[in-house]
Length: 136
Ligand SMILES: Nc1ncnc2c1ncn2[C@@H]1O[C@H](COP(=O)(O)OP(=O)(O)O)[C@@H](O)[C@H]1O
Ligand SMILES: [Mg+2]
Image (cartoon, rainbow, N blue to C red; front, side, top):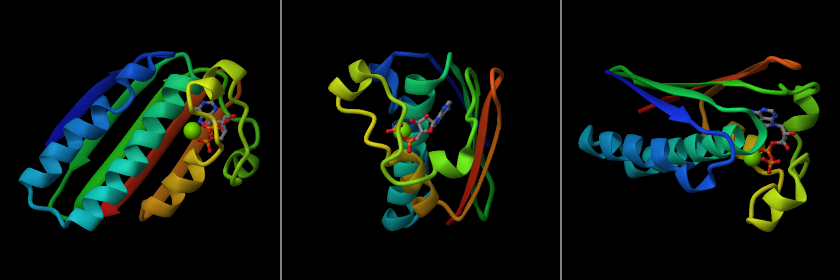
């Protein structure tokens, strides 16, 4: 099964749409609650990043019998230094975004912590592709 969601830049009210839809599917598949929680946290943080830091993109979820693979592909500024971006507390979020309660610099570290496999590809001035996988 495949699911696709568009993610609109700047629309924080819609961040969480993909993660909550996917959560429903995982519950239907009777995936362990602990595993569901990890997947939902990772997807939510990744959605927020596309909303906050890119010009918009698309999330694709691929389900198979062993687990789920999530890809988020965005157009945007990209990430110049991925190792730096992965560090706890590092954030380039605007003051406006911080005032909305985002931009603590915990998103990428949380994605890393809550996924079984994670790959980030990014090209400055073009965009970012985040791919991760969790096993059921
Ligand atoms: N999709 C993205 N496009 C461009 N930059 C990104 C993207 N995702 C993350 N980043 C960069 O990585 C930094 C760290 O991300 P994260 O750990 O989620 O913290 P936060 O979102 O709170 O800033 C961001 O501040 C931003 O500079
Ligand atoms: Mg973030």
